[in-house]
Length: 386
Image 1 (tube, rainbow, N blue to C red):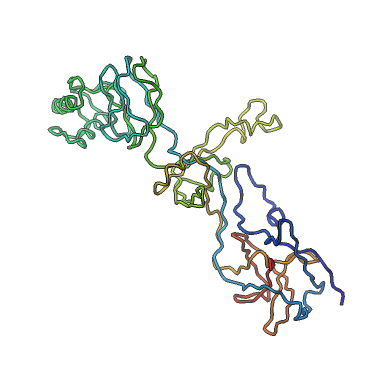
Image 2: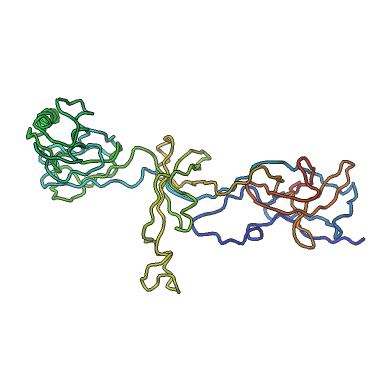
């Protein structure tokens, strides 16, 4: 019986999956290439019988073997981002005057933190969800009143009820607070006195210097969250892969790994110019299209990592497909059959081998899902890279 000699290697990604791979991402096919022996580009040659049912001579059996295992396969994708603290919240002056004091870069910001002074009047951070848009005095009612009263209560002031009504008792507590921080004791609170921030954070980006004269809406400094955040961009079509709440793994420089959770996903205009090719449907005439938007994603780390890594590129790894309880073999056990498709070299108990055709499923982490009439958990097969 004649034998056909073919060059066999594990299939590359283009042979296994014809789906387009969008920009800004790369599949995590870990260890799917052949083991390189003695230098890059080495090839392994296998003699494959055209009649796959005929047993091979025991003397030609594989030097290396692997067992068919039953496992859960998970395919992941890796997206590149930058480690930092997220997009700063801009703190802008609400009055005019001279900057006479500034908080330090990277200093902590919490409830009651002094951010800067304008004409020696302190501007204080308070935590809430409604920005200060008016001056509050006795008789005022609203959610902004409750924000101020809640902050005063948290800072230890009392004698009033935390609600949406600014009373004489509220004004008395405000005067005590103003005396403690060195502000003019007016009993009123307005936009020039406080900055409402959503949560505690840190100063990130000083925009003015001591002695500068500022006008309303001049940016004074930025405030970011205290949590370390990976910022990245993904195609809008891939937004579903990394929804808010998705747990991910962040691969750091040096091989370290950190856990994270997607906390923000926002579709914005793509200003990179990559989507504007001037072609049909490409938005070349200024018309908005699919290529004119991008998804900005933020991943919050579950715990802090080395500050020296801030600003470094990192990989965000997200699981995109899982196959449970399937038969798998190392990818380098696959043989490309002369007639098309793939097979495994099954090693029998007596040492003889057969080439058995198999169906392949998902590929992940250097393994491939397989099925076939002669394939079961524990079946011994030949493996390349020997």
